Length: 421
Ligand code: PMP
Image (cartoon, rainbow, N blue to C red; front, top):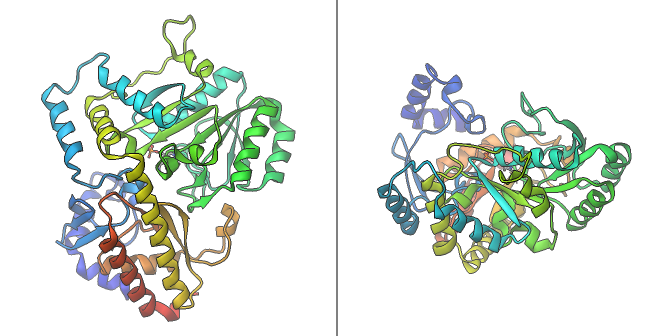
């Protein structure tokens, strides 16, 4: 079977995993990466290629879950990191680069009238909710079933063991009637409506534009802040999903590629809310963090935005993603199997079932064994994606890589045809 061949082909990965179990539960420190029988141990990356511990080469179709938009060896980002390194790593004070990076982000996302940096998207969401609760004096937060806002803010299948203690109200995604009913019940106590413009980890299910627009209006009606989590969707256009749809949230959270591939998060929005973090004001909210303005992230993020990721480059990447998704879905259609890739632009997700998908409920019938099967078949054919089926293109991922992916999927589906729905 595919798993037996995987095991036979990857003895070094298996050995490294077993050894690592001495110090790390399941040899791992990011739950999302673990899968049975063991994940591949990656040794090296270049452009959009990866090499594993056993020496196999892959096309990197995962791009670090969207954070790796620049690929592994973007020369301008490397130069910026080396330059920053030579100027001293831990400067213990304000630096000019952080204001430059903030300005560059604001140029793309004008709704971030004031913003602050964190070390991760998770922290960005925690701080946005802290700002919303402080600003409104309310404690409840409306979120969506299947949403993922970070390691301690997860509302999907497995969920999180310790969702931070807000009073969560969980609604169905893309279901306006459900949201309205919950707002009718809890509206006066809601500090925020926190929403991903596309469920990311929850399966690359886009919000219908009219649904997001109605959330904007409902938040206004009940006095809650609308917080858009664009940690994943910010890459869909120069101004993110909010720019594409013309929605102005009260607060936005960002992360992933904005740090040039290094640890990063950012939250920001309305001036009257964000001013609360101004330490010159009496009773200001604190927001510290040793590495919030670390020089490597600031330098890499700035170089990426100013020297590499132009509006044109981003649009071309998303067009390439749209085309790849169409081609991959054509493979399923040609083999008459009931599978699909959902998503938007350069981000997509393998779904082991056909038909329209609008909320986490629609994924309940999904058979994870189908995803596993295709994952192992694709890896064997040199395509690296997430075990759960996520694909996120990076700038170096070009036509040749897309063609190789389509051909690998065709081979994998042909081989497993009888096992697929
Ligand atoms: N929000 C969304 C929508 C995400 O996809 C993620 C990470 N996948 C996060 C928040 C958390 O970001 P981080 O992993 O940097 O904490």
